[in-house]
Length: 258
Image (cartoon, rainbow, N blue to C red):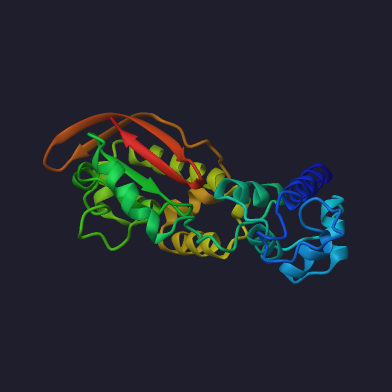
């Protein structure tokens, strides 16, 4: 964490600490209370850390705050999802209370309902490029991935391990290499994540094409553009792709082919 980020983190925590009343936190207000919001000692007690630790964090010292400590602080300060995400972004840490996918089961149904209203192939990828929701048009386009016969919902598994992908995706070698470069950019802040490392290691062993692309160290932004497919029953298909992040869940990406 840079000094600038550490100072911003401290200012953010302090501002939100001063907004939480003792009553909200289940603490007695006290007749001689002068502090606005929670005292540092009270926040420390709620988070099971020392007051000195809270002081250092708020002063922007490089105290090496852990993700678990930040999670307790977020709960104690009643942070909203966007505020919690901002807290971890400032600290450069991954939220331990989010799955690697960054999505809860409760989110899947609304996502599925949204996709059903899109009259084009559309799907949502999580932080590991696992498809967590898709519509029927996407399932019909991506046979062997989003249909019921698929052994894996991971996009990289489909592209590099499913024989159907090499026939479906026009100019497969170019698109496959680009996907690896896009994935590297997507997980750049989480390359030391166990889940990311396991996925990459597994694919490098299973696919020489993936291994070569990964070793090339190419990095590209995941963008839209023309997409061409040779569907086994519908023949040549051409789409424009747009990819966007989902609010409050930055690890989730909505992909639409129109």
